[in-house]
Every structure is written in C-alpha cells, then in structure tokens.
Amino acid sequence: MELVVSRLTARTKKFFVLLVAFPLVLGALGWFLPVGASGSDAPAEAEISLGNYENPSLNDPKQVIVRLSNLPFYQENLPDVLTEHRDDLMNDLSVTPVSETNIQISYKNHPQEESILMVNSIAEAFMKLDKRNFDQKQTIMNESIDQLKNETVGPDAKVDQQRFLYELQTEALTMKPAVLLKAPEEEAMGKNAVSSESRAVLGVLMGFTLALLWIVVPEFVRE
Image (tube, rainbow, N blue to C red; front, side, top):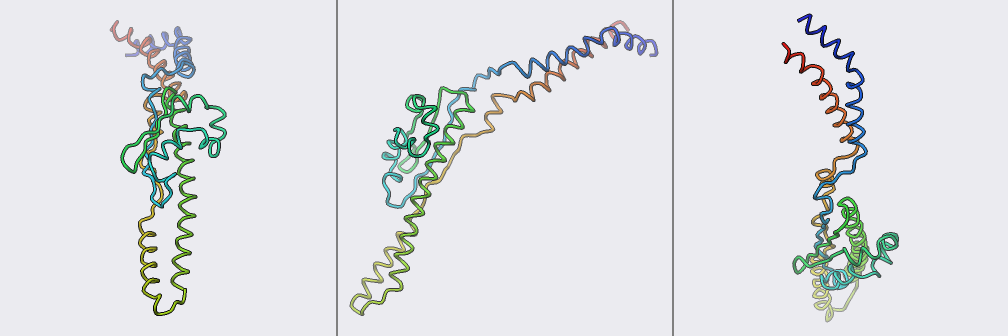
C-alpha cells in the first residue's frame, strides 16, 4: 500500500501541470463556448383572458388582435421596443384567438430569452392599459350607484330609481378586468441554456476528475 501511495505521489508531481491544466481548460471552454441547444429558438407564448366592462377595443378579441398587431399600440405603450424591433414586431409577432374571450401572444424566430422578454413586455403593457381603463369604468360605475342611492325622488319615480339602481349594481358585478392566464416560462430558458457560470464549474469538475483518473487508474491497473 505504501508503494502505491508513493507511486501516486510521484505521478502527481510528474503530471502536476496536467492536473492543473485540465480543469482550467475545460472550465474556460464551458464559460466561453456558445450554447447550441436545439430548443433555444422556440417561440414564447402568453395567453390573456380579456376583460368585460363595455370597452370593445379592449374586450373584443377581434379588436384586441388588430390593436396588438399594429404599430400605434407600440408607439403609445412601448416606444422603446418599437424603435429597436419595428421589423421584428411586424414579421415575428403573432396574436391569435384562443376562444371567444381569450387571445394568445406569440413571438418566434429569436433566442428564447429574447422572445420571453418581448412577450412579457407586450402582455404587461396590455394589462396596464386594461387596468387603467377598467379602474376608470369601475370608478364611474361606483359614483353613479352612490349618487343614485343618495338621490331623493318623488313616489312616482321611486320604482324607476330602484330598477335603474338594480341594473347598475348587476352590471358592476359582471364587470371584470383582463387576466393573464399564462406567461412565458422563464425557467424554460434554463432548460435549453445552462448559464456560463454553471458550465464553467462543470468543466472544472470534469477536468479535475479526468486528471485524477489519468494519475490513479494506471497504478491500479498495474497492481
């Protein structure tokens, strides 16, 4: 056993440069080499359930699709994105109906991380616009209900007041804003592209393991 240890020590000294070089070289390769994952250009998708508050331009799937497929929406809500990706938006962005109330936003032909960021930006901009309009509608509706409740009317108009109040309250209950049902999965980026740091660490570990095997295995084979 002492002889084996002695020979291993000698081989370690002899191949010390190799023991150091293997981990460094493989670590550097892991850091600098690009990742060529086959799914890296997969499209990113988001699904939105549109709101319901009597605003066809934001509640009707056909009108929303037209709105998100043309430049004015991006000029008003995402000017920086439009400046950098005008041609890509027109060629690689797809907005399609999923159901009578839902739409899907899809962006393709780009690295997955870029596609995810693009779809998230568009979905977020639409959701902000929708919330702003829904809040305005809800405020007007609540003010109308409160005003009607507090209004003093004669006996002849009391029935009409109650009927109108009931209609307003019913409408308020059916109102709803848009809901983001499905956002692009950011963790999917990790499935197709391991980070540079992780690849570098893996390369160092593999290099160290290979160097140790180069030193140790011949001695045990000899035994």
